[in-house]
Image (cartoon, rainbow over the protein chains, first blue to last red):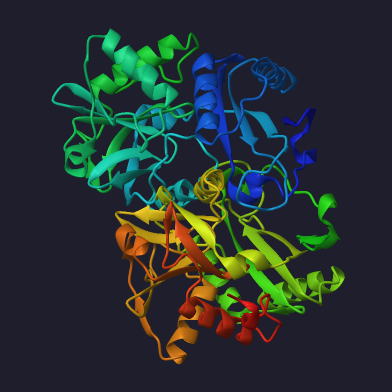
Amino acid sequence: LIGYLNGKFDDLERLHISPLDRGFLFADGVYEVWMCYDGRRFADEQHWQRLKASLAGISLPFPNLQGCRSILDQLVERNAQQKGTAGIYLQITRGVAPRKHAFPEATSPTLFAYSFPFQRPREALASGVSVHLIAEMRWTRCDIKSIALLGNVLAKEQAKGHGAFEALFVREGHVVEGTHSNLFAVRRGALWTHPLGPFILGGITRAHVLQLARSAGMDVREQALTVEELFQADEVFLTGTTTELMPVIQVEDRSIGDGRPGAITRELQRLFWKSTAFPPPLEFNELP
Amino acid sequence: LIGYLNGKFDDLERLHISPLDRGFLFADGVYEVWMCYDGRRFADEQHWQRLKASLAGISLPFPNLQGCRSILDQLVERNAQQKGTAGIYLQITRGVAPRKHAFPEATSPTLFAYSFPFQRPREALASGVSVHLIAEMRWTRCDIKSIALLGNVLAKEQAKGHGAFEALFVREGHVVEGTHSNLFAVRRGALWTHPLGPFILGGITRAHVLQLARSAGMDVREQALTVEELFQADEVFLTGTTTELMPVIQVEDRSIGDGRPGAITRELQRLFWKSTAFPPPLEFNELP
């Protein structure tokens, strides 16, 4: 795989950073992930806007936007991922400097990026997954897509240990989001998801699905669910850039609905993949 | 400066890590800092114990202890820092692996270390410093000395913007700790500091000063102070490995006591430096 680091394209294995990079010492950086369908970045502008907001959140000046776009274009071309689905990862840190907490003066940011082939998990998207609940322990600026992801890592690992696809954080009795996804539930015919704010990342797919649901005339509520409300939801699903729209059929040891992806989840999956202008991973008329 | 990375000693500038190191992508690692007096690591065993606890906190197996000790010994020797005060930094991450939140299998940890000359800030230690209060936004596992330090970085930078030496975090009305130091206050003759638990790092110097105070017959209370109690404290100081014992004479725009380091702070400074068996940075009989 070809990657990019501070002006240079090379094999990912040959790219190296200093251990004095503030990304390595302090998690002093932010990142963004795009999904590409046949080489086209989905919701491209929205990802740049979120990156801008994340950088502003940590007071790091935004680099040359046009230059960044061109880097991502070249990565996809060089990696011959114009066909099919692929991901692009971009990380910006405050750069290399002697270790001191406060911002260094006159240090250039580090810009690291690579693209990767990504096969969508057809089986899971068709059949649904289970999720594990975990007490929130992360910071209160989850709206910043920072690389300070240790809490997410520990929660995801715990979910994996429970055989679950994702961990959902519970803050003061309310389910907020997953370690790399947003949460939706269908309850009494309405679509619920946690409101924007400091406790969740403003997911691009989250916003897109909300728009699709509203356009389809659904009753949408950006309101947090309690754990009990989640257990009793008729349908549950997760959204994310590479997660797309993933049905949840089990929360802890309790089945959601009849234990199969629900009708509204299916309809939103259909609308979502239609909007990508790319073949969906599922044949809807073959689904149970 | 000579550093160490995964088996190799070299100029710090020539050491390089992969951008796929989980320390860089996820802040998936922990660190430790030692102070050396004439080449001797102060409270050495306590630092290893804390490192062990931090590693256990993120479920990362502890590497060969004897080998680690030898690395630190060699760093100090090679950097010719046997005389005077110096610091040693050691960081362990979960290693290099394709980017996925959950722990990778069969990946070796990354071990990075370097020592650095450190001149103690005589003026500040003599005259005292001011501190800035900031709403807590970090995660609830501050007892783990993790490299997910973005919240500490942002707070310290904000303190710097206010001309303060350190930022103190306030959680639910109580002052917990600084971005790289623990907080103490003298109040009605007793010495107060926040109790151990998930909201603060168990400082080695904090524990040492508590022991010194108890041995000197002081009334010690491991109890959190409210912001108002801090403002009205008779004396305030910070502790930390390289911060040692730093008087605080101002919190926000309010003076503490008579605006000069207090008598108990001075006595604890004296006892602390005596215990280091190394010349103190201050001549006590010349102090105001």
